Image 1 (cartoon, helix red, strand yellow):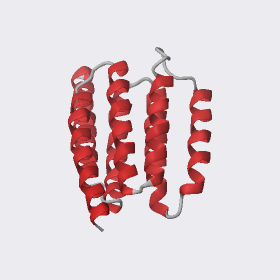
Image 2 (image 1 turned 60 degrees about the vertical axis):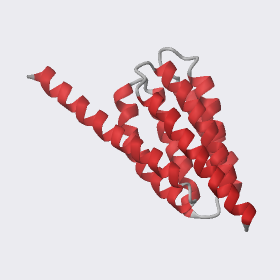
Image 3 (image 1 turned 135 degrees about the vertical axis):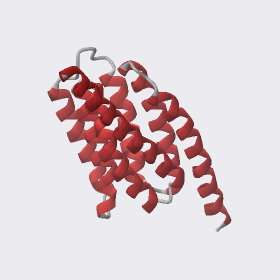
Length: 175
């Protein structure tokens, strides 16, 4: 019991570090910098999920880190066939660890975010944070990754703010 409590507390401390690193990533204008901060965040999230025993979360975060390394090499957008190969790997590696419906949440989030990265459009990437933020909050709550919920809440708010700002810029441009 004491050991599990210690892992839980350690997981929440890792989560606070994740929030700090993610905050730096949120202010990046270049996709290359976004990849770097996202990779750091993913590896720490994998550690947090490991401490909490959330296996699909671990796998998705590790594979997402590899995605960042691969996708960052494409300066003009990632070819769709690379995304399809990535999606097949992501799904097939996770299948043995899906024991409940909520185990699909990190898979959906990583695939959606990866697809948006392929489009090479920062506005779409920010819009994807709305969906991934909501789904991430649900998954993290269920797995007791409470600091992860805060991270996903900041992503959700950032996605909403980015979408509204984009709509305002478009409206000003059109008028």
